[in-house]
Structure formats: C-alpha cells, structure tokens
Amino acid sequence: RRDRPGSYSGPASVSRQRLESLRKKRPLFPWFGLDIGGTLVKLVYFEPKDITAEEEEEEVESLKSIRKYLTSNVAYGSTGIRDVHLELKDLTLCGRKGNLHFIRFPTHDMPAFIQMGRDKNFSSLHTVFCATGGGAYKFEQDFLTENEMPVNYNTLLFISNHSLGGGTFYGLCCLLTGCTTFEEALEMASRGDSTKVDKLVRDIYGGDYERFGLPGWAVASSFGNMMSKEKREAVSKEDLARAALITITNNIGSIARMCALNENINQVVFVGNFLRINTIAMQLLAYALDYWSKGQLKALFSEHEGYFGAVGALLELLKIP
Image 1 (cartoon, one colour):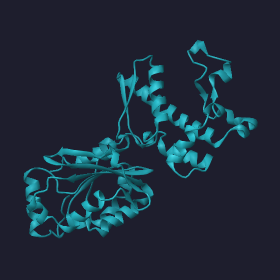
Image 2 (cartoon, helix red, strand yellow; image 1 turned 60 degrees about the vertical axis):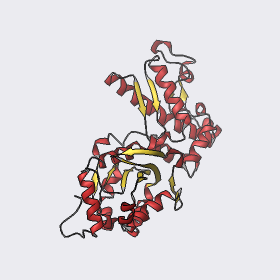
Image 3 (cartoon, helix red, strand yellow; image 1 turned 30 degrees about the vertical axis):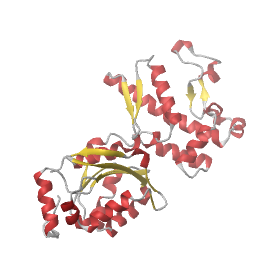
Image 4 (cartoon, one colour; image 1 turned 120 degrees about the horizontal axis):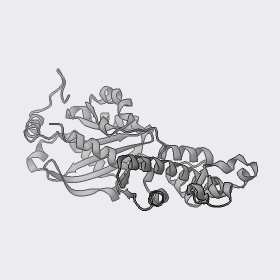
C-alpha cells in the first residue's frame, strides 16, 4: 500500500532512497508510531542522527521540515507536549541510530494534527505509518482524504478499551469537582479522603469481617456513603476526586489480579496514560496486589507507561519491507 497506481512518484532522489530502503528491508523515513485513544493521542517519532551528507543533500524539504518541527519544539499549539524527559537517545532501530521522541495531545485535536500533515506535505513522502487504538479506525478516511497517506493498523495490540481507566476518572472528576485538567484532578485527589465517600467494611460490620477474611479498611461500596444527605454535605471536592481515583484503581487491580490468577503468572506490568504522574494509583496497585495475593503477585511499572501502544505501532512499521 506504499504507492497507488497513478500517484506521483517524486524526484529521482526519492527513488534512490526508496531502493536503498527496500534493499535493506526497512521503511522510508519518517518513522512514526501512533496510538489514538479516546482521550489522548500518543505519538512516538524516531529522529535519525546518522544521516550521511549524501542523504542530507537528497532529503526532500518536507521531510526536513517535519523533523525540524517535531524536534525543535517541546510544545505544539496550546495542548501538544513533547515529553523531553522520556526521550531515548542513541537508539538503534533497523540499523539506524537516532533519538526516540514521545509526544502527546488531546484526541479532540486530531483534526489539527491532520491539517499539520497536509500543510507540511506528508503526502509527497509516499510513506506509510502504523496506528493503533480506536481512533486509528475513526480517523482513517481523514488521513486518506487530507494527506493521501496509507495507514496500517496494528490491531494485535488491542485488548479492550471498555474497562474503566483514565478517561473515566477524569470525566468523573470534571463532573464532580469542576476540574479542567487531568493534572488538576490528580492534585485534588492527593488532598482528599476517600473514606468520607466510600462505605468500608468496618462501616458495615464494625471492624474486620473475619469470616471472609476482609479487613475493616477494605472498600465495601464505592461512593456508598453518598446515599446519606448528611454525609454528602460533609464531603469536599477533594474527597470526591480521591474516591473516584480509588474506585478506578480498585477496578483495574481486581481485573489484573483475576487475569494473573487465570494465567498462573506472578508479575503484572501496568501501562497506560492513567498512571502518568499518578503515584497514588501506582502505590495502591502495588500494595493491593501484594496484600490480596499474600505476597505472591507483584506489580511492575514503566517510565514510558502511556506510550506502549505507540511504540508497538512503530515496531509494526519496521516490519514492513
């Protein structure tokens, strides 16, 4: 799907680059991986640092423009961010050395991203990129219409986007507290007390429920105290944010534990943008898995937790000869 009949084949220099890439079984630059989620778009971009003088001379202006734009900025518009602290330097991919950049922006800004590709003449590069996430399918026609860019979908990475996660937490906090950013929601949660919102085992049984091995501090009913008007009037927005965070985290931990038991594994790697700058959830997950498994199950976390889908899409691209 790299070229279509009747499409413009570009200057001779592009043809030489194409032959070289095909000979070495690697795709043409630029190398992108895209994960288009319901809330955020995560993009990884490989910036080659071993470009020869000949390649530099032959490189088309649109490719230079893309590389300069992505690597010389740490912010794109009012919402796009390059996570500089996550950058991987001197990485070797398919025999090329370079830096791997990690960029994110809200999914509602995808039209602006597509327009940027059109402005920078993506279509003239005759390349392909791989995308994953529900939005990859949603925006397929936009990419093809605006930029004539072939899109390859990495569906193997898709498990389920219906379990509760970061989008649910943020949406609930917007509704309950009036916050306007994910970061603000987490900050509020860090100052709240979820026990004022949730009904605990001790609220029902007066302490531990030893018959079923339930400690008194365990949540018996998320937001269960909110059935009482008196208790509703006593809680703060911070308490509500904390309770929302605990609810989502408990759900994720329960699913992870059941899957681990079913697959007979003792280590669970948690990824996803919900855990970005979310030390509260990471601590809760680590403690809960260790406690409920009696030390048999461990939670592991990655520095690049939110970008795993995009990295997988990039690796899929590098399989294309």
